[in-house]
Amino acid sequence: MRGAFLAAAFGAVLVLSAHADQDSRLEWMSAADLRTEFYGVKLSGFLDEAQINWSECIDPDGRTLYQFMGVTDEGRLSITEEGEACFRYDTGPSCFRVARLGDKGYWLDGGQHGGSFVVTSVRKNVTACAPEMAI
Image 1 (cartoon, rainbow, N blue to C red):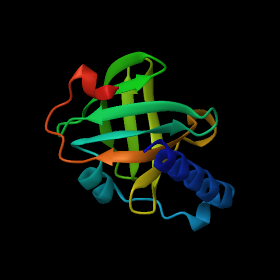
Image 2 (cartoon, rainbow, N blue to C red):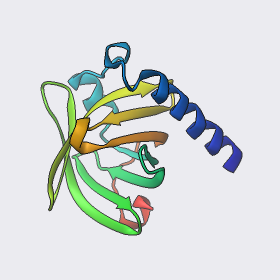
Image 3 (cartoon, rainbow, N blue to C red):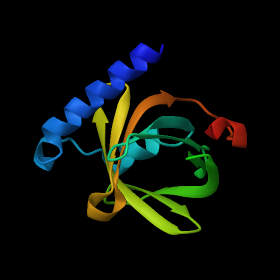
Image 4 (cartoon, rainbow, N blue to C red):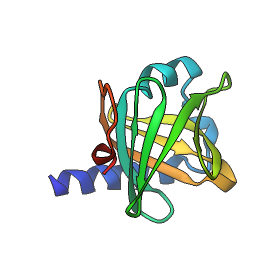
């Protein structure tokens, strides 16, 4: 299992390396696609720049539980009409353009100030998030 994760992570890094400087090659998801795919899911992966693991559980109503470096924060997801996924926490919002990485992952691009997150695992049909799900 660990080998499969490392292979997926390595593959995602290769894809990002090939596309990071050429945004025009990435197919950014639409607001409608994000609304369909980003509610009622548990996402996990790594922060691209630092290779640090994270996870986020998103209720069907948009409530989120985000786990990063041993801390869990509750927030809310909203999708803009421009097709950005915006996660709001006590520290403020962070908005990302999102591209699919194959059929099992995503790349969340926060621009110069938001960082990039690679999603390597997606669990669908989540009906409610509990704190232990964010881990």
